[in-house]
Image (cartoon, rainbow over all chains, first blue to last red; front, side, top):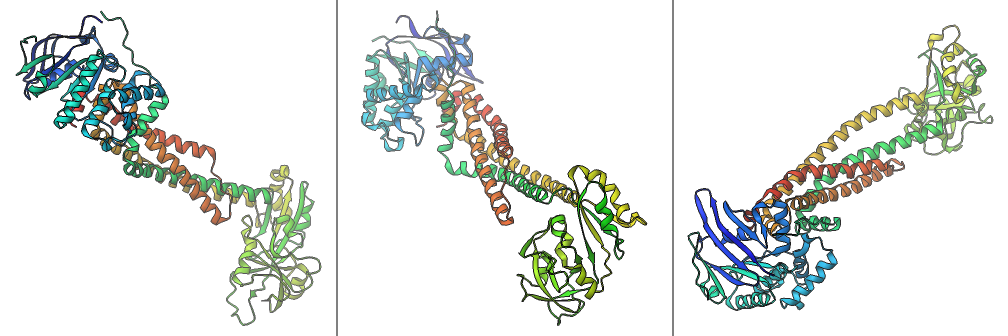
Length: 224
Length: 395
């Protein structure tokens, strides 16, 4: 594939009097693995929400996978999220009392695929994240690291070109966190563009590209 | 730049149900209690309708066994019909059968020690042997008076009369004190819905009444059965036929009409009970709405997650609407089952056949779906309008 998967041009986001993101320009190409790093309040979450099309910019333009987000309706954005973007959250967001395989299968719930197809895809995805033996387990029977791997399996279920991970290791100990990062690296090797949002400079430094945010502005990058 | 159209995939019905049921499975106790509210309302309504239908069915059954073509001609209190009345009425065109009773002044008691004022409301009648076939009376014990009895001290008791005299079976050993001498109880009549007067009667043969009880031989009530099609033409003629000199002194009635009027009164009461059921249902619906509002508030992060997975606002709305509908449906089906149970129990106690019309069951379930849709509408709209970022902000 060619062209950027994410392209922000002069994007700003204002909440009342607060300018959460100011005149951001950012281009992320297919197959990249990068960190968006900054202290809390620096605008990371705002940037994630805008890149994830969960929120719209106050001004500026955003293209995701070639689509001009500003020109799309809420319905169309939902389809774009279903097809193009996978999300991983700090709190995992796994439904209580639902077996891992069904949680993962819900990653394709809004894609129009049959339940059988979704479950088969979920099996493969769980295999991919190394949880073959945990398919029927409920979230509370899994460790934190395993829960985040289930969430990642759900996020990559229909092979979305873009994976947005919001503090994916924030709720994990360093060992589980390391394993999760390793998994994200493997997914990136498989061709998925991975954006890791983090406040942890060490994690950011370990990734090929680092986008620094400070007070709602993107700090000019030094390409490694 | 883009080539592929972004059109949301249609969610299969099975997935809509599964996703809607997901919220219910995770909170069984709350679901049970809110469904119970609906169930009580529906059970009340189905029960009222079922009991009403069962009693109507029973009444129709009795009416058809008695027939609706029975007419009675009664003399005013303390007066009598001429001796010719039975013959005159029997001769009217269209009248198929005719019978009569004549009130006597005799009193009936359990035995000769009972004080004379304690009559128990029992009226002693002279009765013709063909009374049961014309009036539709049947005996629950012994048999009706036959030609062999009518000159002897033999008596048949009405249902209530037998109860108040504490006579439970018929036979030569069952004696009651009637008109100053002992009479043997040869039969007991079943309760009669159509002719309740018969329940309080003690019936003796015409000849024995004239001979021993000072009966003057003139009837006080004549029972006539015209053919079904002749009822309307015969009814206006009965007064004059029974008492040609004073037609106004004879009261003509059609007992089945009275029974129908009674039924209509009961249906007015049913409307009231049905109203109470509707109020219960309304309260149940408010309970469902309340549960759904709380559910939406609690599940903001789930809503955010689903939006991030690609759910459209419409799909979120559908999910919560489906949840509300399933919740009400659960209550509705439970309520219908409960209502059928109440009807069956009530009918069993009354000795009726239990009848719950299918439209009542369908109506009950339909009403709950309507309630569920109304109760779920606002919470579902709220869930759909929730911005995904806000939903994800609160874990």
